[in-house]
Structures are given as C-alpha cells and as structure tokens.
Image (cartoon, rainbow, N blue to C red):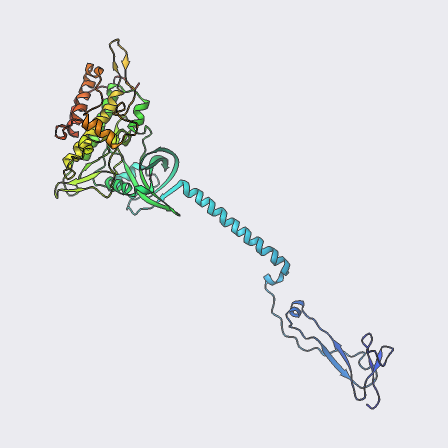
Length: 459
C-alpha cells in the first residue's frame, strides 16, 4: 500500500505518529494483533508456555482492532500427582513435622524395648522339650536329660538377693514360679563355664544338690552377662539361716545329715554307660550351702569343682585358676603339701571344710543348761577369735598349720548325746592328717543312726 496504513494501538502506541488510539504504519506494512497466553501457572514457571499469539492484516485502516489471535495447539500438560497439588510452603512445613513424628515414634518404641530388656531375660535353647501350656517347672525338668540344661525360658527379674565374689544373685519369676538367677562378673567367665559344665554332668541331680535349670551368655550392647538359673530357696544360704535361727536337735541333724548326703553324692562315682564322675567341690563353706523349705541343705557353687573318672584315672580341673576360701582351707592346702594329682586328697580337703561348717551348725543348737534353760551360742564363723574378718593366706597358715588351732568344742556339747556325737564327727573331719578324716558316706551313716524325732520346732 503506497500510503501509510492506520493501525489500532490503544494504550500501546509508539510516541510518534499517534492520534485517537491509532498509529500510522510505514508503507507496505501490516497491522497486527498480539495476545500473551499463560494457560498454566506452574507451566509458566517451568517455561512450558507460548508467550504470544499474533495475527496480521493490511486490508483497511484499523483492521486489527477486531482481529482475533491464532491459537496454536498446546502441548498437553500431565496431570499433577496428589503430592504436587500442595503448595510448596505447605510441603516445607509438613515434611519436617512428619519426620519428627516418625523419629519420636521410633525412639519411644526403642526406649520401651530397652526397658523391657533390662528386666526380662529370654532363653531359647534347642533342647527338644515339648512345652505345653500347663507345664510346670518341675515337669520341664523331668523332660530334660537330667541336668535341666537348655530350657526355653522367659524370666522376669524382681530384686537382688545376694552378692558374692563371683557375681550377684537375683530373684526371678518364670511362669509364676520363683527361680534364682546368678549373674557372674565379666572377670569370672571361667567360673561360670565350670559351674555350668558341672551342673550338666549326667546323673548329678540329687535332692541335696542345688537344682539347675539353664545357663546362657547374654549380650546387651557393650555388656556381656553370664547367667546361671537354678531353683530358688527363700531361706537363703546356711550362713544367713544360722544367723537368724536357733536350732533344736532335730533341725540340727536334718541340716547336717542332708549336707553330708549332698557331699557324699558328689564324691561318689557312678559306673555305667551314662555314669557320673566323682566330683570334689573344693569350696565347701556355709555361704555355698542353701537351706530348703523343708529344713534340708543343698550344695551350690561349683565354680572350682574337679571331676574324676577312675576308668582312665584322669582329673579334670577345668580352666579356673582360683582357689577356695582361705578360712575353710585344709592344712595341707595352706602348707601346699596336698597331692593335687590324687582325687582322694581333694575329697579329704572337702571333709575338713565340712567339719568347720558342722561346727557352725552345732553352735546354734540349743541344749539344756544346768538350771534347765535352753542355751545356744551366737553365730560365728570358724576361727572368728583367731584371725581378722578377712584373713590372709598367711593368717590362716599360722593359726591352722603352725599353731594347730581348731575352733573350740564347748563343754555343754558333752552333756547331750546328739551334740556329743556331732562334736566327735567334727573333730574327726578336721583332723590334721587327711587320711584320718571321715568320709562323707561315713558321716552320713553316723548321723542317720541318731534317729532324732521332731519333738520341737526351730526356736
């Protein structure tokens, strides 16, 4: 077109050649109409949009005033997922809150688990036992090989009931029945291993040997606990029982006779396909003997025990380097003249210690005085008036070996047949010459002949 074309440009006209919302185009130019399209805000942010649509004309002046833009086909936008429907600000708030909530739930579960683990010990051993809903502890022991080893247990610890040089003893409950859980110190792994091994000896079970249930090593993070589970006797050790109770003749003989029965069973070898080796305890003392509900004793703590099988004449000392309690050591142990390769020597050392425990029992037996009153001596440990409370090896050697001292035999013991017999047994058990000491079987037969009736209860 040779003349200038007027184009519509309301509010968008250039500064020159504009009037009444129009502008003059150059010769042979076109008027145009441009529309900016934003069809999706998120597409706009990600640049998936067409910025402008343009239509052109030159037929007449202001031809572009009613001109519609050409709409180009849009690229389909994928449907947003539910997560992308949330505004970004909402996601920034909810994601950290959700993370904190999940973390709090995990920590709660973890702390509850740790608290339950501290009070609950779980044992799962492959024992081949058939566990029924109405089984009792004694039922499961009857199903076992005789040692009770390997029972699957869930034990709830209640309280500590004692502590010794090897560890701590706790009262526990399993399916409503009380059990004792001995937790060994980490430095006494050899004692735990030896005691477990002795308890699992075939045919060891006896009414005057502490009943064994199970043993295990339990790891809790950096802590390793060596556990031994046995029958629980609420009367505690003989040491504790004698401090709290005065005895009559019947209760004294019951304690003494049952103790000799337990030691006799240990010392005796049983022959057969599944025989029992002879066992020397090597740490007989009142703290290692427990008192049952029926007033009998049972022998416990086999961490230093020695096994002997006569068939091959072998002694099994285990790997525990420790020795027994100094106060109860036999003279030949104190002066180091004992023949450690002879099992009979080890048995006789047990009988010396047995004589000292029998002396502790006899002190607490009440007998009639000259004026008709019952009199009993206060509880004391052997050699209480000769050595310090925690005597050294040299203290005991000087008293027992050098000076040849033994605990006092009281005059009142000679005025009664029961105490007189007991005093004779005591003196023969602690004889300086091991060969002159009584065997456990001989003590058992001697005490059994006394035939003391239960005329009175413990006073």
